[in-house]
Image (tube, rainbow, N blue to C red):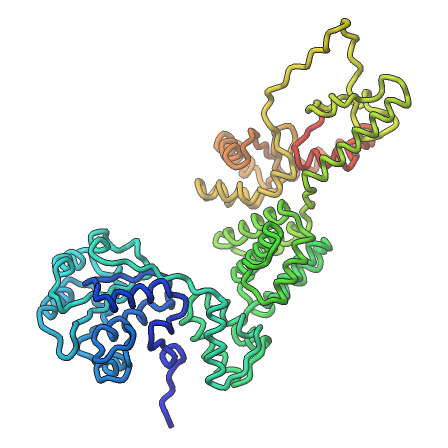
Length: 564
């Protein structure tokens, strides 16, 4: 029985053109070999599993091969076979994490003085070179700058920023890219065909996405699912084997948002947790889902979405339903939930609360639609004014510039919820009426804006004063009016904490919302007693007018506030 070899080793590239997704590196190295313009030191940087060590080994074989073919190793001579098997005395692969001390580097410098045993070059491949100590780097500098003619250094690292500039300046640097998902799928499909393993396109997509740009990781996951599922693998089997959240779950979330189904979203959270899925992984997938819809909505195409053709079509359909403003608000809320999980003792409770808030967020109308409604209202009022032939109408110039709300008594009785401008005194002949001076008053916060970005505000407070931010998470946002954000607290201690930090919180509000406001706090008992004594609010003509859809939209989107 032959020895089992994992896919990443069995299908390791043997020629430069077989390296996936790094043609900008391999072609440059082949040209350098062909023209004999080899450097004495190279540094390969990039994410894990993208071919850095593989390319280093190919370069070592190509420059030592007895009969190279078009700047590629022939993989048939004794030198190539020894390098492939890892038994060559001329190619030394060193782990920088476990050989990071100055003594190991001194031994390396000493051995570099001796000529290679068989090949033309003695090659030192140091993986994760950033793990070397500062003293080790200093000991390597002189040899790296003026090495013997038969020595080549190849460094590989995933954290190039940790390598000293003195080392980088002595090397030719190549940056390896994250491998595209289509290239990973093509590689896995070819391997599956050679191994006589049947995998559908959705299954290949799942494995490739799980690899997250690393071909080696994707090949390791491929081995795992083959061991569990056998030689015929389906999409559902991979979801079960890797305990991944199905893409359909995220489309269910957006369906629940469209239906404003809070009960359904709680059932979905329970289902996700019952199946053992990680909350952070679910939120990360939901963020990517929202990002895909946003990209489709913004660009009008799905080419930037890493998904199968079927799901790309569904993303294009979803993009027709949601606006850009809505998607950005959804992303901010989900991102805030993901960031807050590390501070929460009960992640499920936070997830449930934020998912309910997600489905209950008011949809943001497009500015163009609001302007169109305002133009329609202007025409209706102008027609009403002409028909009545009286001062109750409103002039076009009054609509075209921002006008402060007026008392309910001045509103048109024929069109509830709208506001008219009182008649102006007649001006002298030949003179235009003087325009009212613009008020420089600062922008006022709306309750919708504060509610949608409340998690962002709490995150900024936590970042500067973690205890105060954690305490504010247990409070309840009552409302926002005339530059005052009102909170309900469970205890008097929380109220006093808010009062002590009132100036600090006002600074954070200005930083997050770019508008001045202050926070007032009261206990839940005080609020209940006050509401009971006040009784139900009167349903006046003014309150009915404020319920008009256009006035509601202006208050929500533009922060309009009625005059006191």
